[in-house]
Length: 176
Image 1 (tube, rainbow, N blue to C red):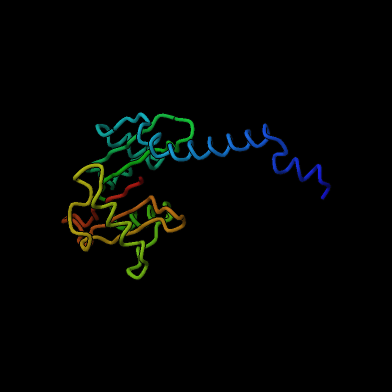
Image 2: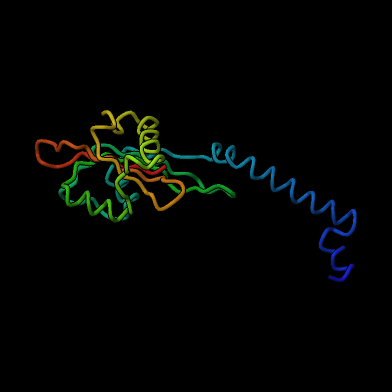
């Protein structure tokens, strides 16, 4: 490599090094503030209109054989440098066939007991819900599912093992 090109690649001058150092320090400061910026992002809690929340979450109207018991959508305002997609939790009563269709649509898989992060991730979500109505029973009372396709399994579904008297399943689905 020609000496003048090597000099350019490593900064070559005090001004070049100063610019490089400023960019690195700026990047470190920006990344270190991301959590704080996310925590400070304005948000709105939507929980009075369950049908509207269902449509916002699943992008379709509520089927006739599905009942919404509870729902909450946390809608974040857009903010530079922060992922601002909605977080949500919803409690449903639904037939098993519909639950299976939803599970496939959301790409959720059963949590394997031998997968180290699976039970921990689902138990953590269950123990730290937005609202106390989310999956109030012990974890053993549910069939747990999660999104395993990513390094951060941010979607979970807990299906109560015992059906309700009308045969439908009580289902808790969340994303956050």
